[in-house]
Length: 245
Image (cartoon, rainbow, N blue to C red):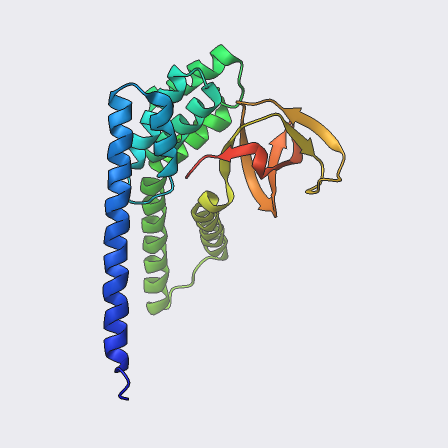
C-alpha cells in the first residue's frame, strides 16, 4: 500500500486547521451577535454572561466589549466589576474622561487606588504616551550611537563621562521596555489578605476590601507582589482581577 507523501499530509493538515479556525470564528461571531441582541433588549445579566464567555477571544473588539460590560455592571450596581472593565478599556484607550469616571465611582464607593495622585498620574501618562516615549528614546539612542561611531572613525577620543551617560541611558531604556511585563494593576474581587511572604502559611500583615485597586510588581507562583502602606506584601492572585495591559 502506497503511503501518502509528506507534503500532501501537510497540505491536508493546513486545510483542516484553516477550516476549523473559520468554523470557530463563525461560532464566536454568532455568540457575540446573540449577546448584542440581549444587550439591545436590556437583558443585561444574560448579555454579560455571553460577553464574558467570549472575553478571552482575541478576534472580538475588546474596546466595545469592555465598555458594554462596564455599562451592564454599573446598571447592576456591581461597582468592582464596573471599575475592572473600565480599567481594561482605559488601558486600551487612555483618556482623562475615563480616568475621571473611574475616580468618581471609586470616591462614591470609598474604593482606593483610583485617585489622581502623583503615582497614578505618572502611570496614566506612561500608558497614554508609552509608544511615543519609547520611539523618542530609541531615536535619541541611535543618534548618540551614530555620533560615537563617527568619532571612532575619525579617531576622536570619546569622553568617559559621555560613555557613562550613554550606559545609564541604555539601562533606563531597557527598564522602560520591560515595565509593561513587570508592572500590572488589579482590582480586588473579595476581601484579600496580605502576607509578608509568598506563602499561605505566612503571617497575615493586613487586608484589602473588595473594589480597591492595587499595583502589582511581580509574581511568585500564585502570589502577587504589591506595595501596601509602604511595605512589600503578597496577595493571592485568586483574590484579584488582573487588569489587562
